[in-house]
Length: 187
Image 1 (cartoon, rainbow, N blue to C red):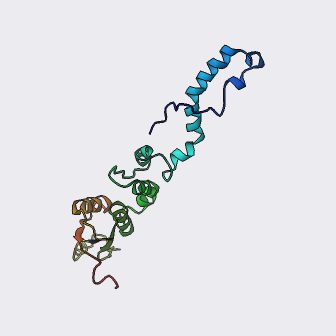
Image 2: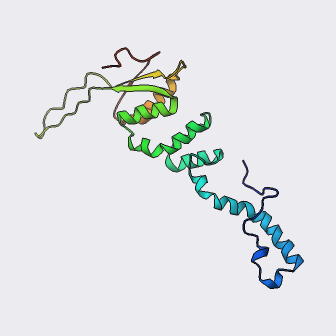
Image 3: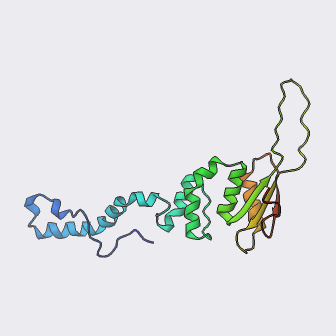
């Protein structure tokens, strides 16, 4: 997409009409300013539509990567355009939930279009006594279970990459890719 000079694009603010009356009938001044109108028309059109360029839901497709860089969103050119737009729109929300169960599930759904659940012991420990023993190790790492929405192949490498990026630094998560919803999903 080009935002350069567009042949025949009229200027909404012709310069010749804004000249003092002395130059209103001057043929050279009118032709000269008409040439400037041709150059400035795309600039005025872009400025008039600036809010549309900054809204990821309606921005030109080639602006999505730029908008994604503003909010730290993932912009994969291989994704469908609507998925790229949603990633930019939801970036701030996903950053807010980063490192949480909800954030991980939403990131997997957005990036890969899969269902996911995260299981862990959910426990925490504290002590009011200085020098107390460390808590026992948790029984297992958190388990991230992923299954397709439709009959599609899931890229395990991408799942692991997203889990690694969205889990807290000190946490090691196990990843399990299922062919369909887990049998114990209803609990």
